[in-house]
Amino acid sequence: MKARSSQPIRWGLVALATIWMLIIVPLSAAAAPYAALVMDARSGEVLHSRNADTRLHPASLTKMMTLYIAFEAVENGEIGLDTRVRISKHAASEPPSKLGLRAGQTIRFRYLLRAAAVKSANDAATAIGEAIEGSEAKFARRMNRTAKAIGMTRTTFKNAHGLTESGHLSTARDMTTLGRHLFYDYPEYYNLFSRITANAGVKKVYHTNRRLLRNYRGADGIKTGYTRAAGFNLTASAERGGERIIATVFGGRSTATRNAKVAELLDLGFRRAPSRVAVHKPRRPAYMGKVGDGTPGGYGKRVRLVAAAAVKKSLRPQARPVAETAPVALAAKEDIEEAIKAAQGVEIAPDRETQTAALPKVNPEARPKDLVLASVQEPAADPVQEVVTRISTSGGRNWGINVGRYPSQYKARKVLLKTALNEMSTLDGSLRKVVKRRSGFDANFMGLSRETADLACRRLQAKQVTCFMIEPGGGA
Image 1 (tube, rainbow, N blue to C red):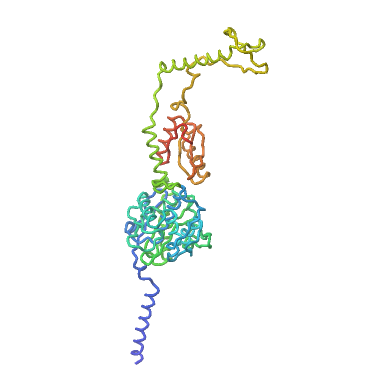
Image 2 (tube, one colour):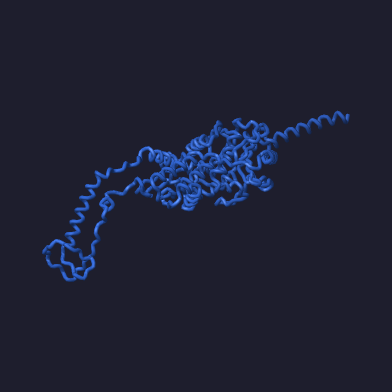
């Protein structure tokens, strides 16, 4: 009898355990597909991959692209770090994780960046997109243009935050590629991803993956992500002894298991990566936003067009025949000599050292006794050298080159110094000059001949460095 009465109790316990598992363990997260990729950041070599090209929900890994474009916009003068951004109702209504922004309030752009990078705040990410492009839809289109330029061939963005939306998909390979570009393209901002805490203006925020940052030696970012459709995602980077590994995981079952898997993959990467390897930085994509004055198409794109036009249309002027110019110069000299004689055809005091002999006799009117005469030099013997009809632009060092426009004078000077050191053979003796514009600071090298400016630009463009020539009088 006791055995019979215990059987319903046993089945009841099994039923309760099943219900508990259904409540505690998110079925969607457990069922999320798994994908992973490990890359040597120095060379871009893939060290491990599994389902790396399967299109999955990226969740908040999306914010890596949002922040990439934000850094790009600041660098190109579209927006400043201290620009105050007004929060829209749409941004304020985004679900958690969020900073808690209110519709109508204003906040500095730099605080939005910190909130999106450290806390993974959805309201901050939406506000970033709206501040740069005017609406989240326009920003998503720019995200897709930039992704294509980077080489993220299997990614489609629909929003700035990564909350689940039909068609909003990416891959482990594409997100690892994006993480590598963040590190190499914007090193001055990369430290955001390693901050355990940050001041986000309205409050202090804490990193969503501070456990891995604190416990894995060398870890310095980058971004976590979670939705029920995606599971627990993470793109992480770590550096040890000059070696840098980036690993991405999609579809983790929990924060703890995801972190453990990423740590395992990073260890695998450090084991497989060679100790010494040449660093091949990824090619930085063309800037396709708008410059500070709102002009679409982008400063970088216009620079290339101007550079191409300078090479094709600014042809080297031909030397003028001496026979054609000499009569003009001689005639000019004769006029000058007549003017000099007219000026000297006055009585000169005998004790003046500049008195000229054999002057024509004239009877000028008496001049005032207090009039002071100025001495006059004879013109140079070479008539062509004496008379200048226009400034030469073919051989003089009146040309310059522009190597970009930057948001701060410090950044422009830093680029000039780096460029000068890398191109000493062509830029030696030139003048480094920073020119303030409405949308930023131009970094220019001045005092070059046309040939040297042309050569310097061609050499820099071959290294994927923005460059265009500045003609004499070009407003440098």
